[in-house]
Image 1 (tube, rainbow, N blue to C red):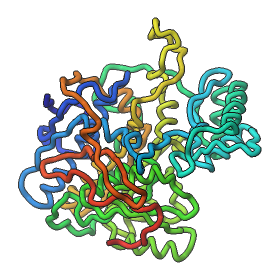
Image 2: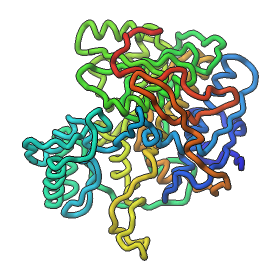
Image 3: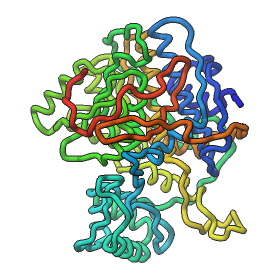
Image 4: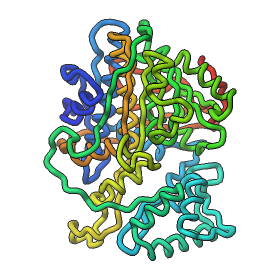
Length: 486
């Protein structure tokens, strides 16, 4: 069954400045009831991938002439890609998505959600709650080489955390852990949901697009939409790396740049590192700043995934970047939005789901015979849909900005947030009828050798007439490439 684009696709497309008349180029192939949830996750997922596919097709036409290619997105490919980390096997080994200290915990007056996948977040969480770890180790790095089931010491630590949190209020935990630099949020009640308006008027913007100064060349004809485009990738974890992974699929030379003192989880990097290279650059050193300046001198795009203001001390504000490199496309991503008292907080998809009321909506009722019972354990979306959806939307915004630059030579400043995507899911998307198609994830998986071993991975869902079926290169090992363009 093939369906035409819905209001969600139109909203995603117009949010990044797309011309409404191009929407008719998009169609969807049904896969039945994929990504099932209370909220319209399937609609969000296919809309963001549809908008990204159309943005790639539009840039192809802008560079090469001719009509915009037709876009047909397979919902099965979308559903598989939105849980790509669950399908990934590295030499037959599956990933461990969350560490033992990451999850929902009862408090004296409700629930909190913690995130402790990285060692520094784990230690800050435990310090804030005054929990002595002793010699306990809970193997808390997601999917790392030593990841595995909890041992007895880890189980003991989980027990102490459970006991401690049960004696505290949820807001108290949230604020004390935040003050210590850790990650925990109180689970918010389900918000009131109004009929779909096709907008995000009740919440944060889905996307913000601003224009910068002129001064960049037109892209010449190319085999792929982003052929020859140089992308500096300053992102971590899922949303930003999904965006730059998508730009790499469409031909961009993507160089991920990380500080040497903040290692990435290997499995997370494998999942989102396809098509890209990875280098370490120390912006606290003069040599590192010179290396970054050399990269910036010929970059087309800079994508950042740090908290608002986190890169300001390095002179990497959008205004400074555009001043140094007129015509640059600067795309920023954050968790909680670009203004307000939460804008400077750390955040991940799971935390935004909890704090925005999504976890309460998706909760399992404590009494199955009464689904309206709100006292059950908080739930989660069937995918880290805020991360993946925002990632595809960000990639779409960059591609659209490059198309607009073909016409006016001007740079762009783009802003996205997980919370903005959450508000769109909550208040701006109407459920669509489920099609009659069928779904088998195996149809959307493939294998490829890599420096990490043999990878079984999800195929990319972005598709237009003539689009590449997969990435040209597997992920390289994190931090091992030279900080130079190809």
